[in-house]
Length: 535
Ligand code: NOJ
Image 1 (cartoon, protein in one colour):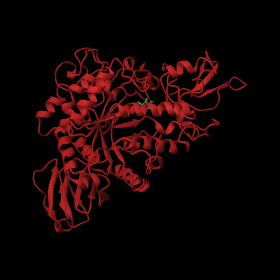
Image 2 (cartoon, protein in one colour):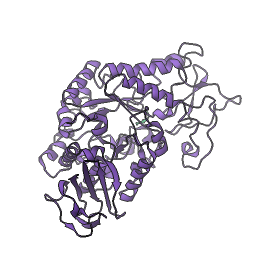
Image 3 (cartoon, rainbow, N blue to C red):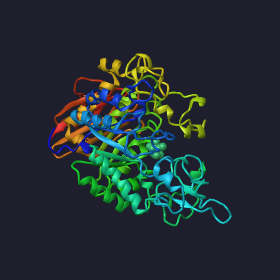
Image 4 (tube, rainbow, N blue to C red):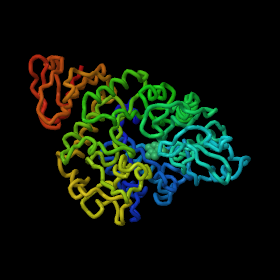
């Protein structure tokens, strides 16, 4: 690989939800040893880094996103020694380690909170956002929590309300307290010193709230949470100097990275936080709002291109642990052709692609009957929203019981299609989605223009097609994606015969297609076509 290769910029990131990836102990919950046993698979995929959803000690009200100790590993997932081995074994295979830092809130079982709630004058009393009831006994202000309760919870021990953006068991830290700021940056330092290459910052844009806690103004919306503009409970200006400080800390170690989960993101917010000197990347969720509609994807890409700083680097993804799996969202049935188009989209756009475990074999959502729902939001909002269990099912490794995920009883059901849809079966099938992902990742590695090149859309048919160039001074890559099931003739708007193209990848053909006069190109139904020309 050329020496200007920057792992987080040129590379591909794979997200693992540790509870569901591989269980070595037989308790039905995934663990670090299980992941270590599967590192060869991850290396074989060709990805450069893994983002691990949290594996710190947690009472699991929000399955790891309620942390009760930032600098240890939950015994159900392993030990610090397992973590050290995970880092070592990952690095041996050229895989970087991205940890999930949940620093907006802790668990209500975190010692900081247990101390804080004891009295109004103990050393931790100001580590969270505490307020007296209003004189009429009412809540301190109108803020709502996104998981369906008011944002304030009364704590009888301390006789005050504390604020939480998520579950009541996830009290928000008071980032305005310099001791909190220091303690959290010490957590970052701890993991940097323990081999972490980067961090995903959970809901980082929420760390600061307005110091006076004014009521949020009203908005139109369905749920109480949506019926207000979240201008005082998030995106406060103090976040910028904090990110600068965090970046300086990261930059004091070689090659480190941070990607932020922008909460309630807009392209403007993503642009604000990824400006030079702040985070390296920030998730923009707009693509998740697109149906199987190339015009929608193009609009999101163009909006991103237009809004972000020219030096900033986008993040592209279609799946994560909070979202219905794209294979189900895009209504692919049992056919994986659409998913190859979706894969090509994330892996050929300008930006860092993120792949969510199981996406590469086209895992579908599982069905979880109401009485078995484990995700609290799903219980709360069923049947309008059935929660996130459906997209967190155990990884489908092979056709053995429980898909080879565990020898015990898996914490969530395995998708019943696992005897056919699994890693082992797809490894053997040259036409499988898994092998297509591998080829795409390799093509991306081989073609600098695909990694670094400028994005330029070509004429397109908004119902069926997306075609674009990725260009550097030395190389041009043409990507054509047929979203439709029927063959199409694509008017690319440039005379392809003037350049000497070679075929980098086609999901359907082995040979370079014929170029028709007038800049036409024919594509098979759901074809992915990637051509390359050197300048
Ligand atoms: C965002 C995480 O992705 C989600 O899973 C979690 O529930 C909330 N943040 C709260 O930490």
